[in-house]
Image 1 (spheres, rainbow over the protein chains, first blue to last red):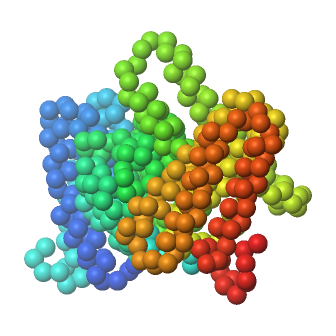
Image 2: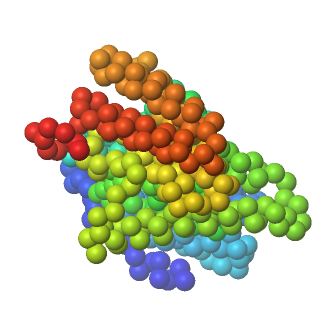
Image 3: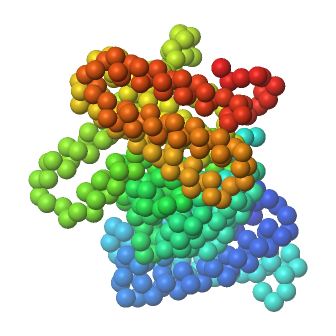
Length: 126
Length: 324
């Protein structure tokens, strides 16, 4: 199931532009830097909830992250969050383990791409 | 575009999402947006601002979106009306939560992510198309029942829910039938009291209450004329009285904040007359047909006098002399 996720784009700016209905530099910068700042607490929550096997907390954090990832065009992360949310809700621990590995890799790649895009937009210190 | 001076409240506990929704709502022509990250802040805004549309996520940290919207529908907030349009982000919410939202007559369900264009269209649609909402007491009772500890085999409670839904479905079916008549067969079938589609007082909140009053008085008229059972006539009479009370209450609250003193003074004169007529309606013995018919005639005359210039105007064709 995570294979299907990895076929999705890590960051799709066309989706972001469609979501915000605006392709201005300000909007892109604000959306990308906003996501880069907003996502880490949820990533952390997912990891912590997974470590202590707190499935409701994991599901809630994945649910929140899923929404903003989809809004930002982070399609792969959004799809993984959706699967994590469902697996946690169904207490499907077999599905959770591989998803969490893919999730960490995806987040690493996404961070790189976000920083790269922000640099291209001329944002310093990312 | 009809939209003007609407307050839209967005509630989402994810900051980035909340900011996005807030930004979109603020850009809708004629709308001013408010945002809240939790139900407590949202409650404070609903209490102190006249909110015209609520957009909320259903799953929140702390009190849920359902809890908040059930309080709105139950009339828990003095400044915000109970029958405002409510749009819910349901996502992968549990079925039970969604079913409860339906019981509270939520206007729309959306799934995230929603684009700015889609959301903007939804906001405009729901500010211009009214959904029939029951009196606040109906939802307050339902909220109480839902919050009460469940007892095994509570058949009475289940039965009551079914009745509530059936009434809603019947009304929808009637509306659809009427629409079909009007559109398809071109049958000229007028309600006892009719609120023209393009009429406005200039205040969205008042328009909705006047339309609601017309609808409820027409329902009372229909059950009375069709010699329905006394219990049905009484039920419609109560609804009509509640609709009038709500109109009077909202007008009083709005008058304290709004400009146009001449408009408000004139409206208050009309509402005082309405209050007297509705007091008569509340007391009249429905078995005394002549008395009820005379009273209905007075109400129709009141409506005709009220639904005219200068209190009420047309939204587009300003050059027409009268609504009637």
